[in-house]
Image (tube, rainbow, N blue to C red; front, top):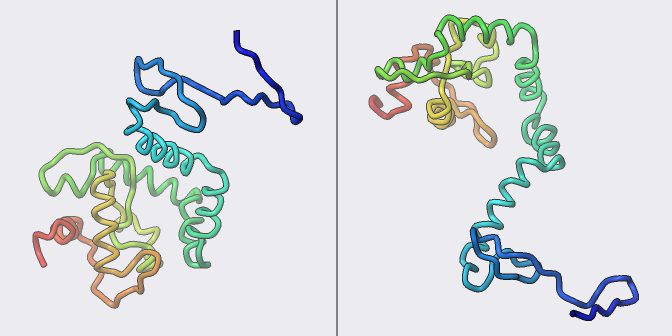
Length: 185
């Protein structure tokens, strides 16, 4: 039987312990560790995954992103507020139905990919005048959206910390796809 000695502030002087997080390992570890000596190599990976999870679930982080990073100036505030309007909701639904919920950028490459995101072919950051033009909208999958965003930052100069460039606007999905895949220069 273990004898617990309590300190003045009501805590015991025994170290806090828990089981090792490694599957089927029942070794006990002392706080703040999560893995025993045998499985200690997993500790850094586990802590990194906890930080990633916490970042996505941290109200303060999310609040900072939404109020400072996302709405960093009045133009960006107006852009993101547009996505909360009834007009955008109707435009989005119209484009999803027109494109049959299939990525337009994959389709020009002969690939069929289901998607639910509607994208501005010419980014509204570059040309606010055509933000509600249904001909400037296309359905896009996650992979193409990431590739297109990277391409837009290089071609148009969009994104935080970049300066908009004076270049020709490209409204053809096929040409944008070829450019973002590096097939034409």
